[in-house]
Structures are given as C-alpha cells and as structure tokens.
Image (tube, rainbow, N blue to C red; front, side):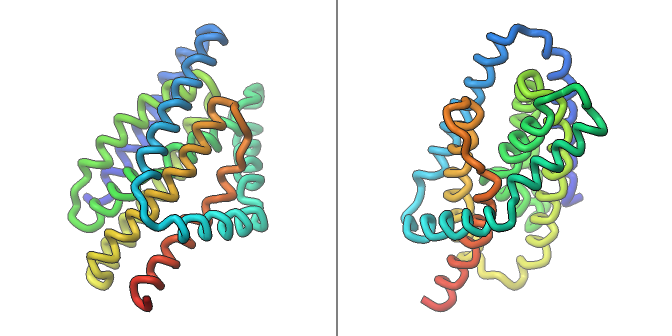
Length: 233
C-alpha cells in the first residue's frame, strides 16, 4: 500500500499531540526551554540540508521570486486564518492554536525526509523512510503541543495530503521523468527546504519573526528552474 507511510506519519503526529496535551501542565520555564531546544534542533537540521549545494544562484532567485509570489498570494495570512478558524471551532480558549498549527505544519511538511520518503513510496512502495519520519514527528508533536497547544494535532491533515500527493505523482511520473532529473530535483528541494527550516527554527526560538509560509512558492520555482536547466542548458 503506497499511501501507508503517510498514514502512519499522520497518526504519529496525532498520537504525539494527544500525549503532548498531558504534558501541558509543566512550568512555563520548562516549556520555554523545551521549545528553544526544538528550535536549536530544527536549525541544525536545516543547516545540514542547506549546505549541500552548488546552485546558490538558483536558490537565491527562487527564494526572492518565491517570496514575492508568496506575499502577493498572502499564504502566511491565509494559513493563520485557517488556524484561527480551527481555533474558533475546536479550541476557543487556546490563544496559541493558530501559531501551533502553522509552525508544526511547516516543520512537518518542509524537509527532504518527507519528500524523499514520499517519492520512494510512489516509485518502489518502500515506506521505511516515512516510518522513520513518523517516529521523529511523533516526538516533535509531543513537545510542540506541550508548548503551543492543540493546533499541532491539526497539522496531521496537510502532512497526509501533501505526502500522498507527492507519492501519487511519483508513481505516475516515474515512467516519464529521467532518473537523473529526479535526483537533481530532490537535491534542490532539500536545499531550499533547509533554508526554510532554519527560518522556522529561528521563529520557534522567538529570535525573529520570518513569514516562512510566504517562501513556499520558492520550492516550486526551484523545480521549474532546475527542470529548464536540465533540458535546455
């Protein structure tokens, strides 16, 4: 079952979030320390992903154009509105609901592990990478929920949809896209994703406030630019 990996990943986030609600009575100081620890770990992961590149020009162009497109589409604002809508209906007294939803969605969605794992699932039916990601996301959900609230639980839905779409597309395109191009595209997505993950980590530690969601179009632009470069240059 090619979609099993994404399902397990989503269930791990739900389970971790529910367990995290039990830990919400810990002191604010502990929550702050744990949150900053998560931020440090996220930054470290982003650095590991981002440094493996020789395509700085394409990355900068993709980031800048992607940011312009994201700001025009108001992606961050729309995600916050969705989080506030969910908060209104499911957690009226939780002021951190929207922040928890947006932050956890970005952490769980952006990253090479989910992309590569979803592609592996679609190409070969191998879900091992997604199972590993599920374990990591489950523990991350516990800590995020303890710090940011129940909004983290609802991030399981976009994670499930996003990874399933990649899996389904990969299962169809494998017969048409050169293997070399797939390798190049995964590397490019990983590098852009690494930079966005660093920004998420800085936000989690509250060192700055970067509208990371508005950079998401840069991932798509990177794919387009690298595809054009592969076929025409």
